[in-house]
Image 1 (spheres, rainbow, N blue to C red):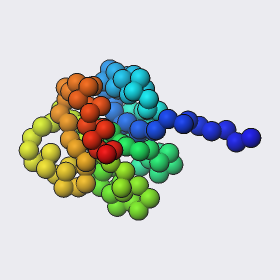
Image 2: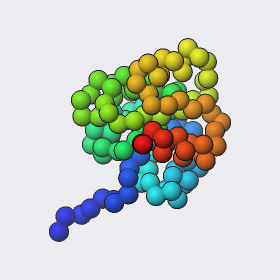
Image 3: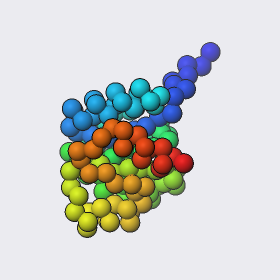
Image 4: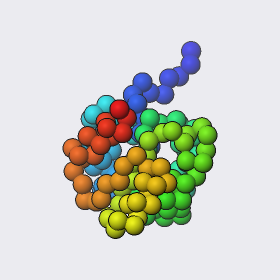
Length: 127
């Protein structure tokens, strides 16, 4: 018999801040999502291609590879380009927000944010 990984919808979450990552992971798991947490920009694109999540949460400033570079790679890949991406960052400068949206991000949230607002934006991005 084949081992079924999870019946829950998957979200890949790339975040290097352990505290934020654990809080968001906990809240999303309580909302019925299976969260795949990555702590750097290493192998994010490969993990997304492999796991095929319904949504991606992507921190802008990650070690190894930054969020905008990852976003560009995702949007150029036919297999995963239509998966919605919500960018998360402490940076709220208009230039960076516009750049992320122009590259194909579904949304952009500035840290700190409430997990309630994040959940609402996830549902909106998935609608």
